[in-house]
Amino acid sequence: MVKLLGKTIRQLSEELKLSKQAINQRINSINGFRSKHTYKVKNHLEIDNQGVKMLANFDKQKRQERQTNQQAENDKDKNIDHILLKQLDVKDQQIANLQQALDQQQKLQIATVSENHRLKEHVRKLSGLLDSSSATQQQKSNDKDDVLSNNVNTRHSKDKNDKQNENRVAEYNNRQKKVSKNKVNNSWWRFW
Image 1 (cartoon, rainbow, N blue to C red):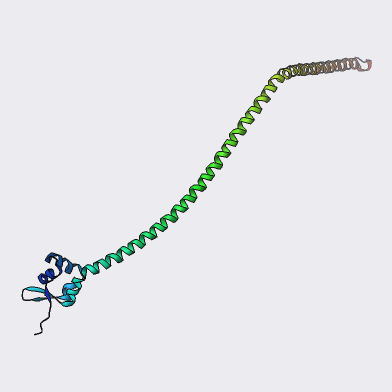
Image 2: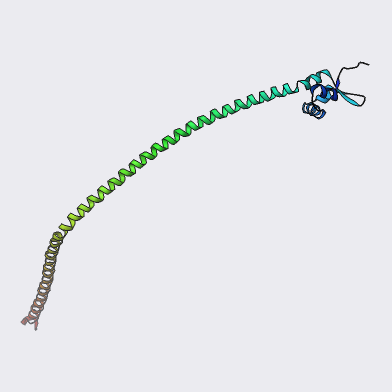
């Protein structure tokens, strides 16, 4: 029978200056370690030389993994920082554009308000002119209305008189016809 030169967990803990629980935690944290690097001798567990090296270098290996992970994390953080800086630049540009648009809008609003005030003042001046000339225009309008109503009344009277004359002429003509009819009937040859 070939005896393998391995170490027990107790020997390894004394050599590495770690507790037996720490050694067991390391063994459990490495996948497939028990099946590949341990064997049972009588009633205790022994670890082969390759397993001992792995456990002895466990801290170095963990540190290297941590450094690799940390380096990857740092690279990831740098990428995130770079992306965030780009986004900030874009947002700053958008804010500047919005600020410029807001400034233009405010200038336009001020110009519009100024123009409105100017137009209102112009309307007030025109209203003042209209008020002073409206009395004169009112008088002219009243005179014009009087002349128009006189013309209308004159026309109406004339039309009325024309109709009355027409009616009288028609009546006279009717009477004349009756008289001439009566004369025709009274003729001497009609009696026979």
